[in-house]
Image 1 (cartoon, each protein chain N blue to C red):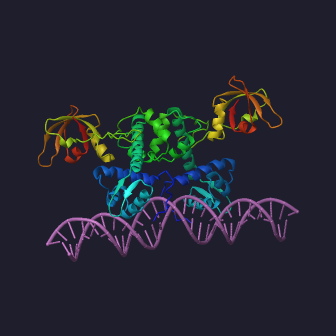
Image 2 (image 1 turned 135 degrees about the vertical axis):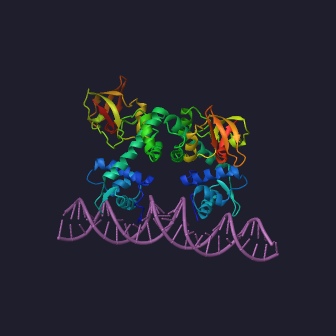
Image 3 (image 1 turned 30 degrees about the vertical axis):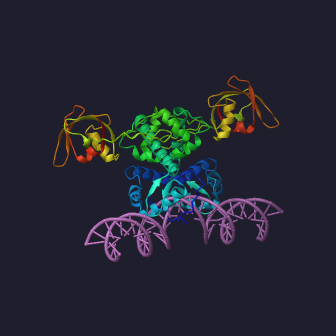
Length: 227
Length: 227
DNA sequence: ACTATTTTTTAGACTTATCTAAATTACGGG
DNA sequence: CCCGTAATTTAGATAAGTCTAAAAAATAGT
């Protein structure tokens, strides 16, 4: 049980990571995120989640009643989005300015996102040119905490002969991004669906006037596009 | 008592801060840093230091025998210098690229210095143009951990009518830096000693062709110069 | 409506880093 | 050389975050 310092307005790294995880899971499950779901996302045990969830509730960051899952309060949402904003801004810096590849910035941004300084975020944002999207096509929340979600269509939604541009990835794991990289399936690439195999829903597509390549349904479902 | 994970090669934030403090104090006291000195620098209690010092000794980062003060091992020195290098590189970034004032970057750099990524340091260093000094004139250790200390003369060492250029500050606290700022006593400023008051060793100096100003001995002792 | 299973919570323990208070050890002055 | 003070270390406690194992609550199947 925690007898934590509710007075403190600062959240620890761990608290911030929990808030981020809950925020992400809330999009899938807006009525309440389950303990197990959080444990899965945080790679920890359900009992640890229960403890942390009590602490966050004490700090008025989430709404929590036993056995009923959690939702973010407005205060919690703000805190979570602020971390996401910092994460994505740093990713832009790492790729655009330091020349990192898009598949190797996540871990570093996981650390940088916890640096505490309002001023730093403001100046970094301006320095980067107030970017709207991170290197994976995810929208960067503005300074008021608003996010413009617009990624509803996936490559897997396309039909034969349709054309679109890749604007984002759902899964940002290195392995997936490296796989995309090999096929030149990067953000901004235009794709045309040549064929959809009925059996496994795999697709044969042409990428930016290249030769046709075959991609699995799993890959197609993790690519956001704009038609 | 600690039964810590000696296998881990990573050091915690706290460990890194202790190493940094010991490294700094070692310059004043090369034969061994006392427990109390570390406690003072870390703003903690001697008993806490004893505990941590045992832990660092287990990890082979320092040499420690009861009641005899500590010295860094080569491994510990490398770790400490690596943190200092990161701290100073980030300070350059904050001032040169993000436009922070030199008196407001220390706290942010204190956080950024703990971000773990070899690649990040290499790329940041290159991005900044492999700078040799941070915004306070402190030398930035190179990637092999070598530091070129050259700040032996202070403004207080000058005699009447002698001329020099300000190249660094010993104390980097905001209050001191802001005080310097007000007098335009910044890095690169040239100074000429007009008068030294015998009574309190305060100095009347001209800064870069400006009007003469009076500075206390304390200020003069905290300014490094090149003649 | 009543088990069986799954989910969630509790209880108790461990680790890191800290503290206070008490016990040791070191050291300087007569 | 001894004694008092200062420095250091030990012992025991606290707090955050985690775990395992067991208990309690919710859900599902028939």
